[in-house]
Length: 368
Ligand code: IPM
Ligand code: MN
Image 1 (cartoon, rainbow, N blue to C red):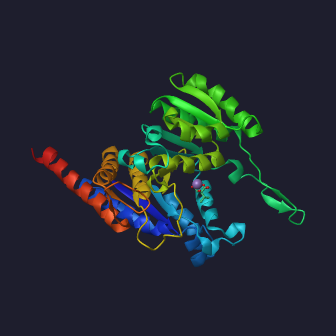
Image 2: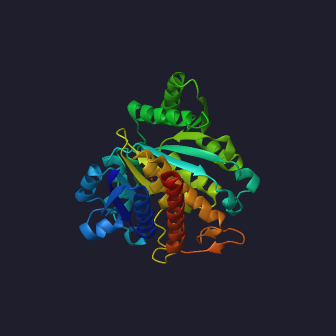
Image 3: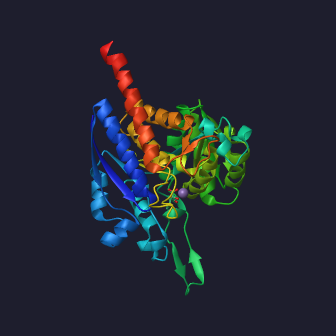
């Protein structure tokens, strides 16, 4: 298979973990006879420094022409005091909008030997396996007006959705639930917000089309509590942009570290952008200690969702599991009796597993 992949490393540890993903994908291409070409472009703070804008046209054009996009992370203290339109985050929001990546899928599954690393009791997190479907191109992140008024005495942000924007993300979530355990929790704030009332109505309208999915509604505050008191209650959660942002960081504690969580952002054409849920972690950037797992698992999601390469996605996920099982972990994780390694070593362990196991598979299936 021949594919063009655009890499947007961005800022901070984004650059380091992107190198890891590229190494893993190169190993996959060699072992499974694919041809992946990589083209790197700037976004976020790096783009501000080089081009004076967080999202250069060249980056948008390259992404539009790619088969898939991998993104590291954006942001850092250097640009924190920039005006809104010159903040690195604008680049990220801009590319999501430009590619119409309305569906953000954030799978959260605890790795067994990381369960003791969670600040939650092991018996609470054990067995949790959920998917957050976050609406990504609407809501309060994009509503207009968003401005200061009356000499800075008044400030306004706008939470707006069209019916069609809500319908398409709800459909996506029902379909995801059909492919999993058939349970959908729609999260809103329908006791206060008009947008949430409409969201809830649309879920109610749609559920007749998906009789095999059991639906419940939960207010976002209650959902936040349930997520850490009884996470295995959940299968698929669907929610609007900002609620999904907050709940997915919260859900990451189930896995022991934000450094483990990948995400996929898809549009109607199925073109995807894949990025870790974590940010650019400026405090540890450049030290070679960042956990590359979330980025590597994001590359696995790319292989699965954009290219339909299930075996290749699976071997990456197995590699991560096996390296953790052997006790290796980065500084953000604790494994009792384990071995702490840096970004490069963690990546090498994952690549070595892929090369060894895919080679032995080939011996089994190609020669005997
Ligand atoms: C995320 C991030 C972004 C978001 C920021 C960096 C704009 O927190 O992808 O979750 O809020 O969407
Ligand atoms: Mn976030």
